[in-house]
Amino acid sequence: MAELPKGEVNKMKLNHKIRMSLIFMLFTIAVYYKDESILKLLGLHINGVEEEIFDDITLFILLLLFFNVFFLQEKVSKYLQKSREQYRCLIGHSAQPIFVRSEGEFIFVNRACANLLGASHFQELLEKPWMDIIHPDSIETVKEVLLRQQKDKDEVSKYELKVIRFDGKIIHVEVISTPIEYMGKDARELVVLDITQRKQHEELMNHLIYHDQLTGLPNRRFFQETLNQKLDQFKSEKLLAVMFIDLDGFKNVNDTFGHEIGDQLLQEVAKRLNNSVRDRDMAARLAGDEFTVILPEITREDVVQVAERVLEELRLPVILKKNSVKVTSSIGIVFYPHHGDNVETLLKHADQAMYQAKKQGKNNYLIYTGE
Image 1 (cartoon, helix red, strand yellow):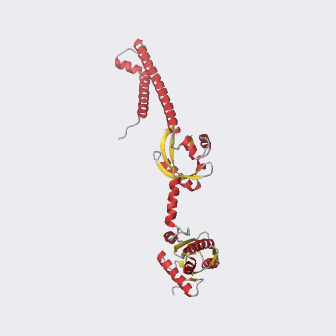
Image 2 (cartoon, one colour; image 1 turned 45 degrees about the vertical axis):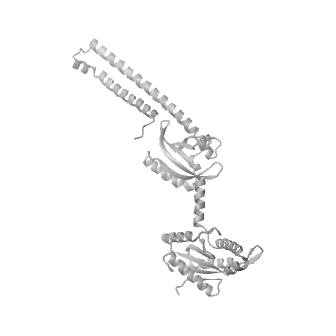
Image 3 (cartoon, rainbow, N blue to C red; image 1 turned 30 degrees about the horizontal axis):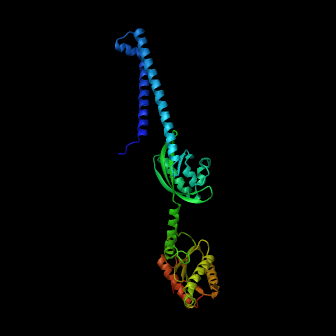
């Protein structure tokens, strides 16, 4: 079992002495007011010299106990003051950013914390409402943590937040919140760790995992996971549509102008595709010159408009290294839940509709019919 710090042991001993002295004071007061009964019990005279001596001794003991409690309280007060000064000195010079929060306000901030948040002086942080530095994305997290701490005041919490520096820059931090007593009040010590670089690395890795490196569009994995999620959450009276898009004549571009021009063309196609769909839609690159689009909350009429816009955008010539490059596209369209109840089936039927559009002359779209 872990041992208590020496300072805490001394504080506990002082408090124990104070409690014992108060108990003896109460006992002495009781003896003083019951002196006649005690004298009778001892066989001494009442209203005589014995009673006066007995009362004087009792009062003297009571006075000694009172002064003992007073001096012990003074000793505890000095100890607490010394502990606060040592604590403030310790965390004030710590390289680790540390807050102390009590009753919804910051009551102590060290220099490292002021530097982390871009404040010229720690006093600026004490004067600023602490919720003002919390990014809107993290407000709910803070509320959940505060609710847990209200239910369990001894909880040690560890959580991540986005905070806003004084210069407006947004950083990610990890916070360890520990219950403490500060200046006689229940408080929370918040040790802060800047994890911005780690978060940026995680976001970069996540982007590489879920995005196509050439075009920047979501890749097949991202497309499938997103579509799966959309199908699971589908409760709309409208439809969910999926487009399968294949470029017509892309192989000729690679054979004629080379793969570098082909890659640049795919990048331009990705931009035009993103510009053609709605803000709520998601365009993705599956592989090669194959693209898909998820269109949630949509009607058949709106899908037709989007498909015609995509055809129009992609048939326009692209100037790449002084070469005018032109391709068209063929589009297959399916609707959930009419044309399939899972990602594989929907993609398969959209692919079939796209190939049928190619057979009918390319530069066209077809809605899957099952025929």
